Image (cartoon, rainbow, N blue to C red):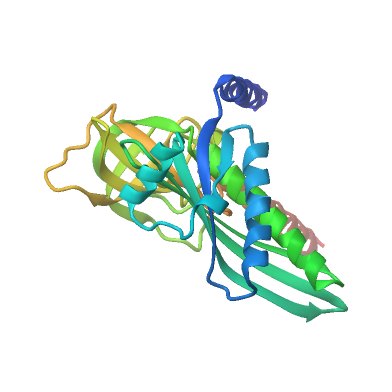
Length: 298
């Protein structure tokens, strides 16, 4: 157990040192779209300011704020690439406020803020990285409660993007079917018809539910979702494979999205939790059996 912990610390140190030695990725921030209908231009400007600040603080990005130079947010990749090339940026960031709600609870106002961002890389491959955060905050003042929720959400999407953009891995095992054994007695074994094992793991920041794209010769040939995270590798269930594409060992893997909260714990932690539960139940069973034997002896 100690050796595994020391290995984790060493790996994290190496990852941090490598990341700090790389130049920041230049990205152009184009603005915020508001689907929530909460407020107007001032609200969108407030959200944009916090996002730019949070992304710059990661050290992974150097953000060019182009909100005053763009009248509308582009939808197609060609326009995005054109804007990025014009301002010599490596990618383009856009944000979307999906939901805002403020409700009164126990004397405080609880603000819920849902934010989505996309980072589209300008050059081939034009990978689209996505981040989503849902955050809550409370305060007697609606403005302060919402401002806190916006700040936490901006930090979360910046964290997600700064984690996934530098991540690069490889296919370790070609497509095959996989059966994931149930880790809790209430669950059933799960069959996946097409999976690949990749060389990115929980140390890389990967979570169950992360989305990945597989590249071959710089071109995307497959997409999938992480269904198991372990130490040293992860398992991806393929959801889309280009016609006639053949995934090979060594193909490049890029992570395009990572969830705010994993639907399940990484497998080693999940097993460890289940083992503790079994040990706990066994201890109680032995104690009850001991009491029963004692009563019978009397």
